[in-house]
Length: 298
Ligand SMILES: NC(=O)C1=CN([C@@H]2O[C@H](COP(=O)(O)OP(=O)(O)OC[C@H]3O[C@@H](n4cnc5c(N)ncnc54)[C@H](OP(=O)(O)O)[C@@H]3O)[C@@H](O)[C@H]2O)C=CC1
Ligand SMILES: O=C(CO)COP(=O)(O)O
Image 1: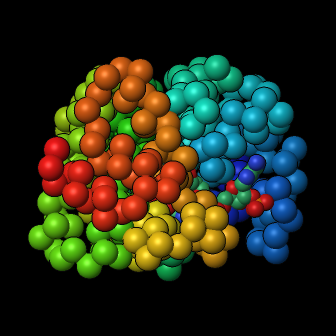
Image 2 (image 1 turned 30 degrees about the vertical axis):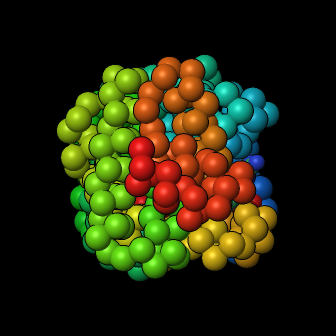
């Protein structure tokens, strides 16, 4: 194994932004399914042999990707994806845990549009891991325009990062229906309560929802057309088909599949999650105006 070497896996928007940031203090490699003209682009085998691996592929692809490609030989993994597996309702940490010991895994969370990180604009991120060593080792790699914090609340970070994408869809719908800023702020605030209710069920800490991983990322994503999930919501409010919206987007909007995962878990564990439920129903074809009536009357 190449000790000390770092590689990003997945050269999409976030992978490329992280590669840019992680190249400030050291050489950083990057790989993807499709070969790209990026400095230090390497093949997958080269990347997998690095000690530090930052994985930035869509949540729904991770299980199959790990099964097909990954062999654990002591690598330290930083998971950059935000989503919950739709088919099973599995959290990413549980998927990774069956391939890699928990002490070797960290999760990045917090407000971080790739388009701003790749311009070296300042931001603050959380590295969540059961092992503080993972935080200490990875935080050294980040450039000085990114401030990193440590948290051991892996489930809190995961829930917040995944759930805010569903709420960003809801907020985009709110904007698309021209319901006004009062309605949008109410939706986001109740959304924060809802995502904490969900997280608490799985043992997440309240502080994660009050800080960068929860409120921070939710306020960012649910207020900006820079968010892909928000733009999905805008399209749904304008009665565009989901297929049409996603074809136009050309990038992943994790909230779509995650809405189905959350709905599955809400039924399985009997957790009251009215906003996520309506997002899932709208994705299945319910008229957003009917969802609004139902939310107001619940
Ligand atoms: N964009 C952002 O601002 C942020 C994104 N994230 C999260 O990061 C994750 C990735 O997002 P983002 O980079 O923006 O998405 P993109 O759609 O831009 O890119 C997705 C990347 O995943 C790769 N990929 C897709 N399917 C597979 C597969 N089956 N096997 C291997 N690789 C695959 C693609 O490979 P290829 O290059 O070959 O097409 C591409 O590099 C998501 O979970 C997202 O929520 C988190 C924080 C910020
Ligand atoms: O997670 C993000 C910013 O923190 C990116 O959000 P979108 O995937 O909705 O663009």
